[in-house]
Length: 167
Image 1 (tube, rainbow, N blue to C red):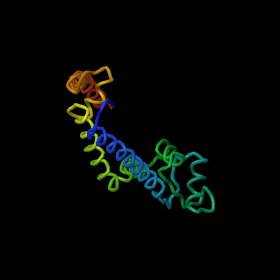
Image 2: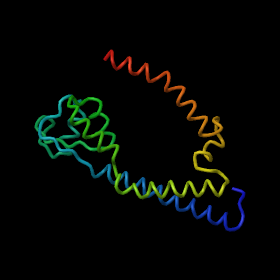
Image 3: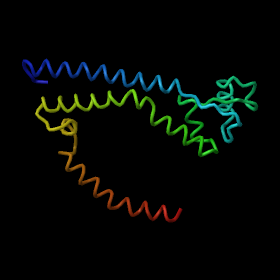
Image 4: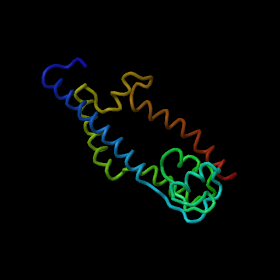
């Protein structure tokens, strides 16, 4: 970046802080992924044998048939569970746990990241970080993206409503 003096120092300090925050964010997600366990005392219907065996092993069960079974958020456990479990209630618990991993720990990090990216954008002469991102892309500005989004919504929403009614 072609900056001089204080702006250059500030920009570099922001980059270092963003790097640290990104790393902390990822570590929090990884820790939360590892920490989550859903213990089932009734045999989870629909799981393939390999996933059932893994869940029983994690649950400390005697066999894949006897349980108990533990399902985690790591992909080896989560994906087969989401794809094959018959219980929508269990799938919902897993989904909600997946999308909210480390949410409390990462909320302040997210806010600081957004603030720093805004500061970075302003140092570079942009109004916001979206404008920085768009500077090297096909869309010229955020308004152009909003216009495309509205155009797509005009076509997609009525089609989606018709499909939902059919279902």
